[in-house]
Image 1 (cartoon, rainbow, N blue to C red):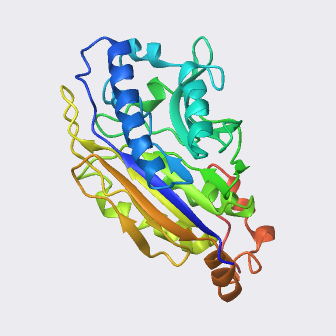
Image 2: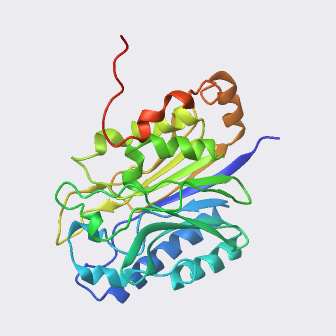
Length: 297
């Protein structure tokens, strides 16, 4: 019997102006997402992922300590606890990207993973932190992730998480595959004119190289007053052959649902034996900060 897992992504625009009180912004965004989660439940979704920093705007467009007040503890913060209740209610695995406080002054871009019975399984902390291009000042807000590349054994599938800028780095994508991921979710916030030409290139390549499904999420709209560009949506699922099997619109709030046949992973890996043919004994230079191996004589 085929292992079909119904998975979903939510892409949305910001609900309130960033100059509003933070608690109002957060409340509005959570309420907006809860409506989409209800829709997902009606469609019998089994695994759902929300967008990067889902309960606010993409505040990294400026460097302002005000946004530190959006941090929460994980798993003991109110958003993770709320989503545990929602997950248990709908028997749905939920990946919940939040702004995490480990301790005062130490903050991470984090995704909590909650199983279908509401159990908190663990978290992934974003490893690669950009501080480039006007409007992507993430090192002001986030400490680089320190929990490795975990894969979570959920009720329906083995799930890995890679967050936004991480997707430009094949090393972690490979480790997620080696750790047993069947579906890797990448919640993102990225704008047109910067990364759009890579959006449908890099993550299908990760899916092919590692033989797993990828769910890529991007928010939509232009967030004033920053106006760093248009978040172009186009969230999608791709299969282990790199084919995009479902894709959302460019400019609308949307729930994207797709049925993923996890048996395809075995089928593809029996053809393309990339894990068998790896040569880790020759990859030492990849861990060096700089320098190249000397050319052979």
